[in-house]
Amino acid sequence: MNKYIRIMRLDHWIKQLFILPGVVCAILLVNPIFDNDLLFKFVIGFIATCMIASANYVINEYLDAEFDKFHPTKKYRTVVSEGTNGKIVWLLWTALSIGGVLLSLKVNLMFLLMEVWLWLMGLLYNVKPFRTKDIAILDVLSESVNNMIRLLLGWFIITDHAIPPCSIILGYWMLGAFLMAIKRYAEYRMIDDKELAGHYRKSFIFYTENSLIVSAFFYAMCSIFFIGVFLVKYRVELVLFLPFLISLFCYYFMLSFKEDSSVQKPEKLYHEKKLMLYCAFLIGLFVVLMVVDIPILQIFSTNEIMIIK
Image 1: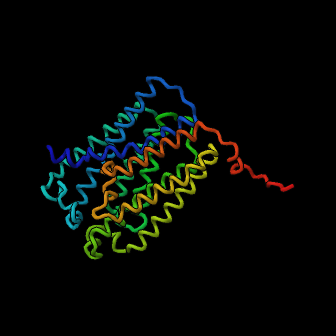
Image 2: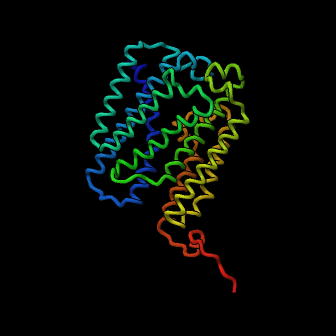
Image 3: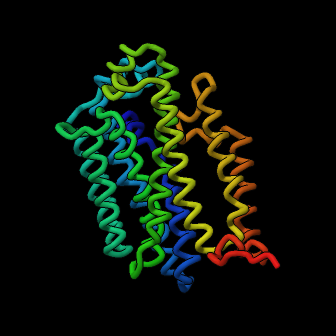
């Protein structure tokens, strides 16, 4: 059963930490009561999200086997190199799906609906006749919706009586689109053969390096805009956070130029020590700006015109 465990991609569970910003946003805006029940919901919700994600990974590996054989590294994946029993794969997918849904019921209804949405996105992304991963632009936008869903999952772990501001929802979606576009760009560069890339992923037939770079730049600007609106609206001191956040986008973009770049495998990004240190710095800066008042920055939140006497 080892190969069936491998296609669950347990090492990818670290990606589910993307629910944390949703948790933080809800804590800052809703002021929940911290108790054992809240901790229980977080643990159960995190496990449920991991199970739904693994269900999506299972069908991804199984249905992509005929295409992954054209990829320089993915051709060594379990389903391609060793083969699997389709009945066992679908049984595993069903068990993970049901398990994720049942655990979600322990959180609340809104959380359950978000998990079902995440599960449905896995079907739309991987299964014909939809298979949005084969359609240029839509492949990035549909996969990055999962990033937005994770934000909502984190939020609804804390509260099911309100929804987060649309600015942070859109910003988080565009952040996911930026990450996915950069991943596509790194993959395209590594394959370095348009015909072979097209066999691996049909959307690559319509992409070029330039178009992927431009799209990533567009998603980055959209993300920064929406996140900036949210930060400044909530606490004006966070305007000082934005230049450092932009630097993070730039550094991540720079990583895509590396040979066999880690941006192709986000679950391995913890190996990028400089990136991790910078993220730790950003977290520290965020905390400082949340507690330190800088009155002069109020000029960014007022619509009054300064009069010169």
